[in-house]
Every structure is written in structure tokens, then in C-alpha cells.
Image (cartoon, rainbow, N blue to C red; front, side):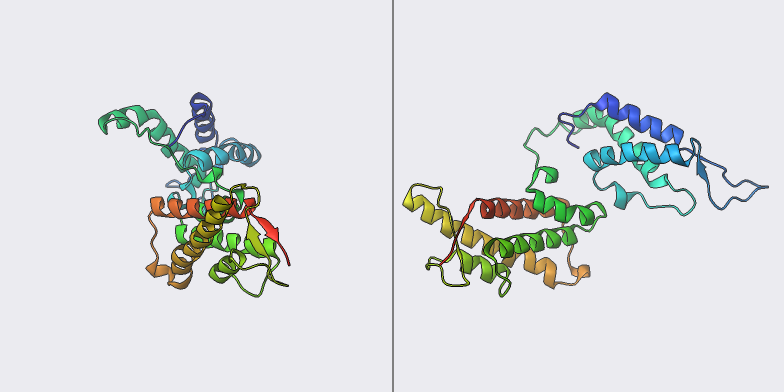
Length: 247
């Protein structure tokens, strides 16, 4: 959990308020059976509090939706359970880090700071625990981005990357991507070759496995999925930097 720049005291106060005010009331007992509980603060107030807490959970506990199942009898149970888990993590983080030999000071890769195209496409699947679907969605977004940039729909993915960054001059209907802002010719050519190979590799080694294998055969560990999203983010940034040259 990365808390750089986070006002932890404010976060803790918001989480405590949510847990306390949305506690379930109207529970069944030995004499009364209640099909559905309600939040102690009333539903309108609970909705207001939930809108404050969900961004906190998304930032500090991004997998909260998949780890805290919904309840048909308690509308705000997932958020309340997640808030309690996050409160426990925040309260005990110093001791846990010291017992484990100190905090990890290495740089952290934040998905929210990747190219907006990547996290925008991946977020919905990621927060529900479908990491391979998140990577697949991001790779499809990069492909669409490239198709739009060069105005082509007749080819896609690996073929489109190779054709768009081919050393050949542009042809009618086949624009090329070049890095014209790089003054040195050797560096400019190196960039063209590198992005072409990198892009083909992203589609061949990242997009194709998650897209062609059955869901039951794809199990991406979180750190691997983050690395793959980071690779796609870098590709998207390089495509943004490229100039379109037409015949």
C-alpha cells in the first residue's frame, strides 16, 4: 500500500465515520425476521458517505470489490467490510513493516499514473479481480489508438505496428510513423526500429496469450499484470510521440 501524499488522518476519519454511520440495523432476531437491513444513518446519508469512501478504497485498496462480496440483505456491506480491512492495515502498517524488515523503498508503479488510455480501459476489469481481462482491454485500446492514428482498419495489432513503422516510404492508404522531432538521424532510425519491435512484442507476447487462451488457463499474478500494463502504457506514449507521414 503506497500512502505517499495521502492525508492518512483524514482517510482514517472518513473510514471510521462510514463504518459507524452505515452499521446495519433491523437485523433478524429470535422473534423478528428481517429480509433486508438498513444503514443506521439512513440510505440517503449512506449513499453520500459511500461516494466519499469509494475513491479512498480505489486508491489504497484497489482490489476491494473482488475481496468483499455483496450482500442481498445489506446494501453497504462490501464498502463497510473493505473500510474495516483498510483501517486495520493502516493501523498496523508500521508494526507489520518493522516485523518484515522495514518498508520497501523501491519505486512503485501506479496504474493510475500510466497512460490514461491504459488505465481507462483496464480499470473496470482490474477492480473486479479480472487481471487478464484488464490487460486484454488495455491491449485492445492501444490497437484502436494506433488504427485511429494512421487511419487504417484493414490490418491490426502486430501487422499494423510493423507496417506503420516500416522503413519503406509511405504509400497511398499506408501512412508511416516517424519520430521527426529527433534531430539525429541515427537516433531517429533507432527509435523507429525499437518501437516497431517493442510494439510487435507487446501484441505477440502480451495481447495474444490473454486473448487466445481460455479464461481458465490464464492466471496473471498481480505484479505480472502490472508489468504488462506498464509495457502497453510505454507503447502508447511512444505512439503519441510519433508523427504521421503520408504519401
